[in-house]
Length: 502
Image 1 (cartoon, rainbow, N blue to C red):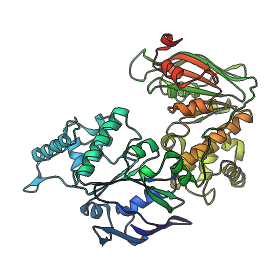
Image 2 (cartoon, rainbow, N blue to C red):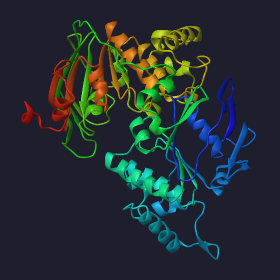
Image 3 (cartoon, helix red, strand yellow):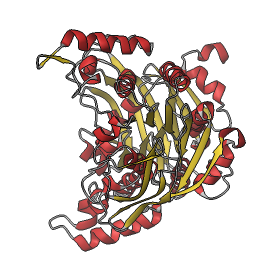
Image 4 (cartoon, helix red, strand yellow):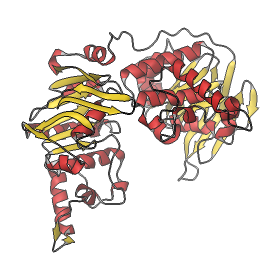
């Protein structure tokens, strides 16, 4: 790819980017969200057709002009996006050959389809039945089916955009085994990931993009994590987490004996009789393994859980009845949810519409919408959170992941909350945006906001929290002050083995 320039209204997403890939090479493409990585790959794969960008794409030294994804696929280029493109109502085999089904006398040959799909899955060492409906598979297995689908097209170039985001450790190992085998067969791979450990484990070369420009391409052996981060953000990165020195006030929120019940299994508790409290100016971290009940705990307090919830909630010492998210907001609770795209944002709406949604009555008035007040409030929160966008009228879905997360955070800050729930506040955003979110959490706590934060990243919990609660199978299994909390102690509690250590 030579001197690729791609513009959107008011934004130059790619500014003369060049990138090359060799046969049998694992070449990682890294950069902050919004740096242009996915845009560059959409140019390569025909998502953005020839004529909507300038520059040249060469495959085997020949200039190619792709107008559709199918044309790129015929040239041996396959891309696996972050958002899976499988049809869940169809089987694994039907998905793999969707649109390219083997036929006989004009009729789909199902026997041959499943035979070919089964052989492909076997070659990839994937123990998946090709006749299984994709909707019955876990997200990790669906991701592996997506890769099998791409490889069924005899791809010479495979693009993987954040392929391990939803995979377990064992699934990641399976994936990397497949990718190493493909590399030995001469397939060139372009790998996009924020997980720099994976990047260094697999890469031959690493290219860094920043603000739509190529910063540099280096052999992976000549770089380290600190150097890559410095290239990504344009500055040397010191301590990731801010130094915390919060002064606590009175207890803002107290939860007593909260239980959250399973939606499908009668009587089963996902959260069992958990009690906790958080004070003004305190960051309370909640740790635990997947399935421990962390998100369900927050959803139960906020009345966002569709099933049965029991227990008592006190705000500033007063018992309150919260039976809907609207009541939670009315009582001063904000909730940055785990999945910003599904539950945090209206992606097709503007930053302003999203920012003022939860606090519209407070910002605009009880009866008529005051657009002027909305704009003033949105500009203020955009400036405070350093949201990178042309104006409050920018559509939220066009923003990078980090900026989308800032908009979600800003939405809740405009409700003037007393306590803020943060569920996986930095999931899917790059290291530069993470640091900005961390600094904002620290700033809000210093200003007296009570914060309850769930995170699957243990360094994040330990780096930001004044106190850490640990859940195991829905029950409180440990509580540590900042000085007491160590990775070892937290993980022992998270696995339910607290008695073995304490």
